[in-house]
Amino acid sequence: MAEEKLLDFAREITGRLGGETITNCYQCGTCASTCPVARTTERYNPRQILRLALLGQRDEILKGDAIWLCASCYNCQERCPQKVEIADVIYALRNIAIQEGNTPAIYTDFATALISEGRLAPISKFLEKKRAEYGLPAIKPTGLEALKKILAATGFDKIVFKKEGATK
Ligand code: SF4
Ligand code: SF4
Image (cartoon, rainbow, N blue to C red; front, side, top):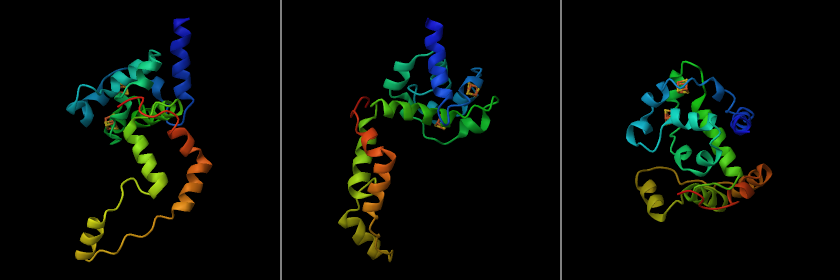
């Protein structure tokens, strides 16, 4: 039974875009030794994430904050001797977490700004003034209506707001 649970999560991940290679991992630790985030904080270790995922620790992975700390630099992926697409596996895990409503509040804030302004960060009057002073062109409008249609067609707007702030 416990073995089934373990295999279920591994199958779920390998069935996801980006997650296909996770079962190639033999836990050598090369990824962790080249990861700039792992060097900065003990809260993040890609080898450990893969291990927990392969052990079927679904809740620990999807409800925790570790998967959100990856900087997507792909250092690990370049060096993995088993050709595990580690950064892409992390994306696959994030996608599952988001679908289940485990979206960190900061991502919900970005999504809110994207849907309402068409940008992740608002453009302030100060910034506009500075751009003009430096001779830079005015920032163009974002084409918000077209963007909203795309976000609605992909279901982004509904998925990302399913449940706010499950992790910090
Ligand atoms: S480098 Fe590859 S095989 Fe080694 S622990 Fe990381 S993912 Fe697994
Ligand atoms: S892609 Fe993520 S896990 Fe891989 S080295 Fe960069 S920060 Fe670390």
